[in-house]
Image (cartoon, rainbow, N blue to C red; front, side, top):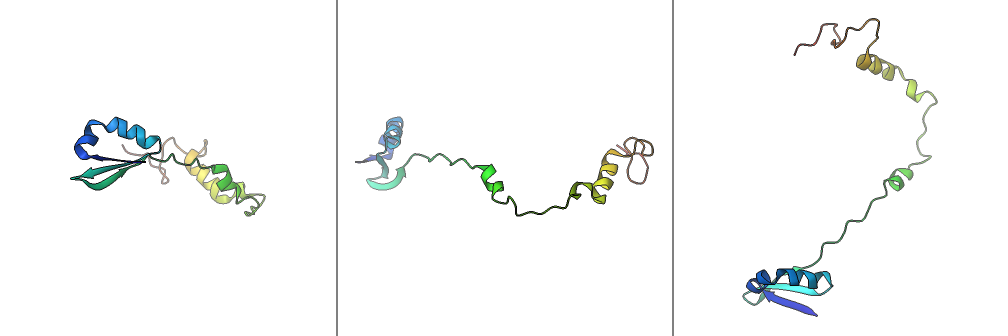
Length: 100
């Protein structure tokens, strides 16, 4: 069963119209007797299974046994963490201290 209410009536009975829409009734709000908008409940978003998304790539990537030991990674680790023996604390690549 459809319920039609003019804007003035809808403003005064909005909570009741919302309850009816949530109960599954079709609620239409009219302006000067002409249907203008339909009041419908918002659908809950469907939960995404992120494990299933990434699981679909299982077995499709081939990594070498030493993929974690690349020279690039070693160099980046040196740049980020430095050599305790040679790198001054908080120094730029050219060896000069950073300026604040």
